[in-house]
Each structure stands twice: as C-alpha cells, then as structure tokens.
Length: 460
Image (cartoon, rainbow, N blue to C red):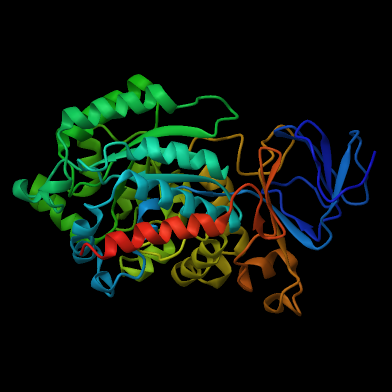
C-alpha cells in the first residue's frame, strides 16, 4: 500500500481516511472513512477501525466533511444565460415567464451547449454529482437542444437526466407561451422517441438518462400529456412536469380544463410512480393524499419559490402521505444560481419556517438532496454511502472563516453556509480537486457562456 493525495488510476482502490465527519445518509458508520474501487464503494470503515480491504492509495480527509454526491432533480440549464435580467426582476411566475419567453425564443444550439457546460460546472463545484434538467424551449434555430446538452454533459462529468420538454399550447389557443416557441404534438413525440433511442442508458452506471417533460398545464395540451404518458410507458422512461407551483396555475386549470391540477394529472394518465413534479406547493390535504397513494414524487425548489413568491412546499405532509420528496435549484433565472449545497440550507430554513425549528433539521434537508432526489430519479444506486453504491462523493473543507468556532461539523456545513466543495468524485474519479475543476478550463467555459448571454440580451 502507498499513500498519495489521490489515486492516479481508476482501477486502483483508494481509502478516503479519517474524515472530520462522514455522513452516509443511513445508519451505517463510516467515521473512519470508506474504500472505493472502480465505480463503487467497497467498504465503510467504522470508528477506530482500519480497512479490511486492500487499498492502493489513501486520501487524508481529516479536514473534510464527506457527503454522498448531491442530486439536483429540477433545473433549467439554459436559464444561466438570463440571470438577473432587468426586464424580469421582481415579478411573479406568469409575468416573469411572459417577460422571458421572447428572449428564450432566440436561443440556439451553441447557447444550449455553453449554458449546459456552465450550469453543470457550477453544480459540480457545489458538490452536485447528478442533475436533472428540464429543457422545454425549442424553435427553428434550436433544433437539437438535447443533443447539444448530451455532448456538453460529457465534457463536464456529472451524471444527468435530460428531459425532453415541450410546449404545444400557445397564446392563440389559450396558453401562456407565444406561438413562436410551441411545437406540434407529432414533432414533440417523434423527437422524444428519437432521443430515448439515441441516448437513454438504462445501466446502473448510467451517466445519461432521458425523461419526457411537457412543460406545464398552461403550456401543453391534454392530448400531448396523454400521448407522452403512453410513450413513456412503452419506452420505460420517467415523466416530469411543473405542477402546483402557483395559485394562478390552479385558476388557469379550473378555467381551461374545469378541474384543479391534481385532477388534471389524473385525467391525463399521470398519477403514477413514473412521475415526479417540480414545486408541488398548492395542493390541499385530499390532493396530497392522492399524490402519496400514487407515489408521485415532488421536487422542492425553495430559492425559486421564495424569489417568485410562489409559496412553500408541504414537504413533511407529502412524505407522510407516501410521496417521495427531493430537492432542486430550479432555473438560474428564478434562482440566479446553480449551487446545490446552498439550496440545502435554503430548504432547511424555509421548511423550519413552515413546520417549526425542531421539526425540520439540517439532516432532513440533506436527505432531500441525496436519497430523496435519488428516489425521484429512480436511481437507488445513488444518494447514500454504502457498500455496493456508486462512488459519488462531495468533500467540504471547514477551514474557512464562516465555520470558525463551530461545534458539530455536519451541522456547521449547512447552518454556516457552505457554498463550494473542495473535492468531488463521480464514479470513482476526481472531478474537482482543491476547489478547481480537473478536466475543464472553467475560464473558457465562462468566456463562451458570456458571449452567448450577451448575444441573447442584445436581441431584446
């Protein structure tokens, strides 16, 4: 056995040793670290123990808090191009969208590639190893957005679930988006099937999965929702949409369809465990019970919900009813950031406000961002540290002024506001070392992203 800062070959076994704290996300003890070989965790090392496994390298984690890689289950990568846009500031959801649709209609494939790289880099640097993106804006100048995302994701190294979103209900037919960014049902379904056949990897080690994601009740037709549900069942992929985000949406559904959003979901064949929803705020008790009975997942997006004043997700009530609940940063134009460890803190604070300080802890928030999100994305191999799970880890240093004087290191990580991971590993390979990207020139990514953003903003 030799000792090194990090292993140099993927097949080598590495002991992440003597962490300041190691939170496994379960009841197992890894106080003295864990051993990784290839893509997998092969041993947890309990307090006072040394590894039973033979290892080739060791990494001294005595300055670090070790977590399972964080999992972001709702995002809009392209929105990194329109952060803090003056015309969209200080608005609630519907007027905010109406201010941004004309800008997003000018997106092209180059902009999608750059924004995907930037968003995934930002997420990775915050300890996020898996991310789901909801891209739903398509036009004649942006025909291959998801293909561009697949290519961009390969350059960064996170695992991704890329959803083929869609909008088919334009303003001329009573929807919210302008007609210039809606597509026909036939085009949407054809492209959905092509992307699944081209990129959806069903293996446990998958770095890319495809899901189907009509945008929302106010931007797609019920016929498209029904046809998408059938295609998802045929292809065995997941379904995703926005639902229950605002009272305006509830009122729209009552006016347009004569029913509330959960009734609408049931009517179009989406009330099942293949589905996870973004936001899920404005449900009554009966609707929460129905969602839980059907095992429909909900992604809590606290920062976005605060910025747009949409409301607070009933996370505890949904969990008690049986609905899995995960965490997402949402779009970088309704969050203005893509930082997953900061989103954990936001979730903790907002849910304390809803349920009381003693009834929602930093551990509860971490579970949303790990095992909760893994359950939403049907990735049981992710979201916790255990033998046989994938070697996706985030290591955070507490050697910063913000943590000085702390007692519990895990609690300090969340309460004192961690914002950047020191080391990040995906599938047994370091992707971040000493707070810097390993395989990516972040300055180049930012430069190309800045050019794409400036182009969009000058076209307003």
